[in-house]
Image (cartoon, rainbow, N blue to C red; front, top):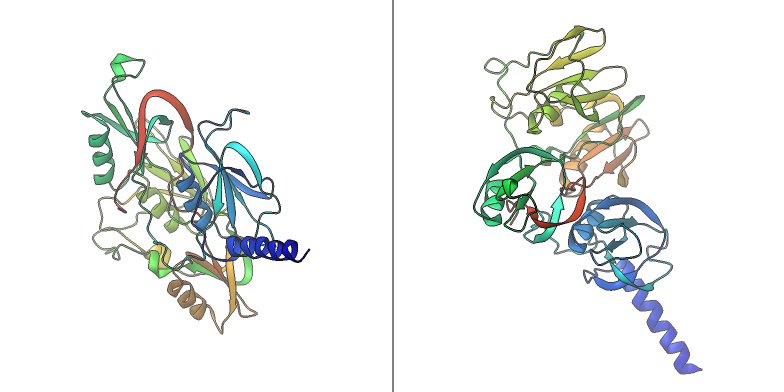
Length: 363
């Protein structure tokens, strides 16, 4: 009886250490069922673990590998959370790899190096340009050298269509830490960490913004993003290599990123501001250094603190390496927020003759 109690205590301590301490180990053929808060696509468990670490509330995860056979959900990454900070169930299940967030690991790298390549795996979609190269190494190098490229797919000699072999498709999805929601609310101030500002301020004399007020560029939308201002919308268009112009709806606070090389038109519409990217200018960080009064960035709270004013909240966010944006309330509450910024392909599928991977700029 005494030995049983000792073993029970050891099991409980082991479970607590997994949930509260740093536990980077991945557990193959283990499932943490239930308690999902978000599902994304990942090419492997390491990518899934990075996404869990960056998510504001994810504590552990389960990833369905390519050898998962119970359904067609290969490459699904399930991010999970419980109030107890540990999985209530742990099951043995073939084809699943599970693990824990690295939030509590003091020596974890803030930047992530995703150097692995994936044979017979296609990151389908998200293309913004293509070229022909000798092999996947050259394709990965091209992706690494292009600041707009986040991941790639290369078709080798085993690809089914000979005319498309040696093709290198460079791909992009939005990774800048934008708030998933933006709304008007009196008494609140929201803004971004100054730590994520990497560019220098644009000289308005040499690069005027040229915002076209009460003007809509209809059609050709490829992404809708919540946005607190038309200037921020222009910034999002500028950093996306597919964006050729944009329109911002003031009442809905939505930025419509658009792309076409065909003929297009513009129309008068009150409350809509449109414009073009400013890639030809010196990069601007004004959009993320601006604070937005009477604007709320709801959700994505990593933690909250008490401060005296909005400036102190912004400084607290900037000094916190995990905070990307914030909301300050008139009661002195400062909510520090975080979203996933690791590149997430829109679709990951098994496809013979395709090699896929990520850029190496963080390596």
